Image 1 (cartoon, rainbow, N blue to C red):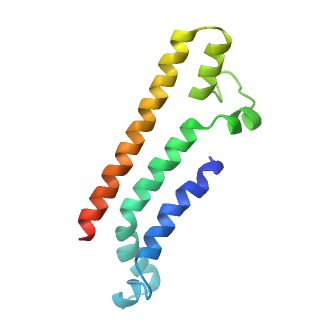
Image 2 (cartoon, rainbow, N blue to C red):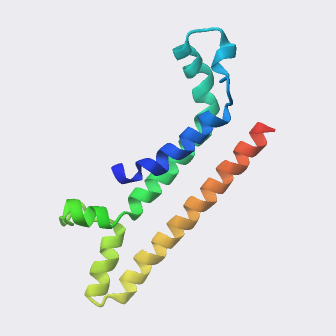
Image 3 (cartoon, one colour):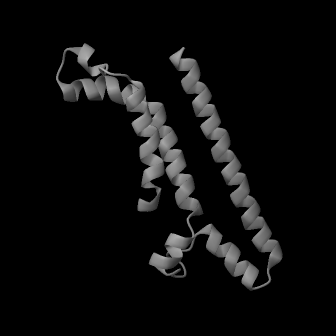
Length: 126
């Protein structure tokens, strides 16, 4: 979703900023495009993965954007948070709790994954 774009762009931007000035591409003595593909992208690979995880997690949790733009069309634009609202409105507390608990577990898994990626990136840079 477009609403996750700022969250996705920031880690990727940070990766390229961390490469320093002048960038490593200048040391490659090849065309800028070839240097970007062979040096820049591999160095930023971990940040691309982190950006994908953050963007995916944000999109899964999006509720307001789907409700306002998509209109909560049954079977087409329903997200987990909409299920929680539906279950609560129907007083189906057990189902609402299971879905909300699943969302919390997913959020914790995302945080854990990002922590592992950060640790991996820190060990690779030393």
